[in-house]
Image (cartoon, rainbow, N blue to C red; front, side):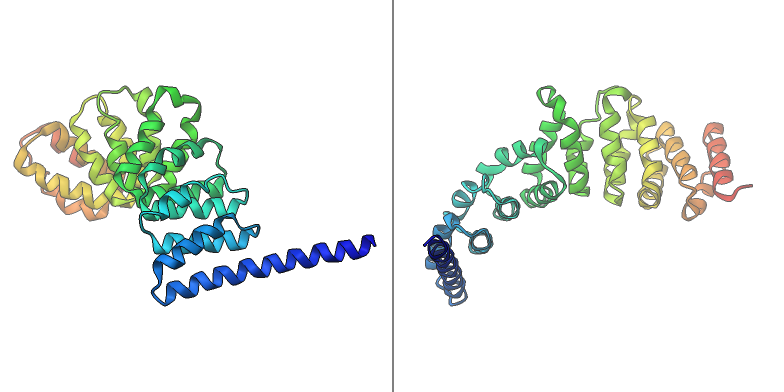
Length: 285
């Protein structure tokens, strides 16, 4: 009798599983046929299905269809018991740029492992500047000091898109206060980061930190530095010019030799000395 009940239980489970699969396949078919509203309603109803595979497919379909009902439905599934489903919900909320969920997504960061952090990075990349500004505010908030490392890790994973928002934190702060922020910028090896940081060379408080960060960017900083040095011929800001020259030397940028030589007859002895030093660093003689 016990064996019979066991088999019946499995049979019911299999029937339910096939029923769920049949339903999600029907929803996907409706979507392909252009019946988006029907497909969306069916997919939303399947978010409560016992099968995590069915729920996962439902989440993907809802994200693909979109619409005013999609974001709220997915938002409610942030607590799904299956990790894969949760990650897909996070990604799809980002795809939809569903702003009411942004704060809740940011709340997930401190307790997230590597896989979820990647999903969150995808989501906030899709949210764009609004979402990234939210993360930067969390990273910079005194109330989140114990979680600062987690937000820092996420910002680095997101990549160059965060550079503009993060660079704005540099102004008016000491080297000690800016250590983590520069570490983020150094970790994102992209030419755009260099372009965004160069204007801070005019700020005495952070100039040395910018120079060090540019050195860590390596080849990704060369083109932006040469371009900025070319523009200095018109502005004549000696301190900024000198700092740009120093950066090319630290980068050992052979592409910058011609630009440096164009400054070799500069009226300022300080500039000429900086040129000689940088050319020595690049050429080795």
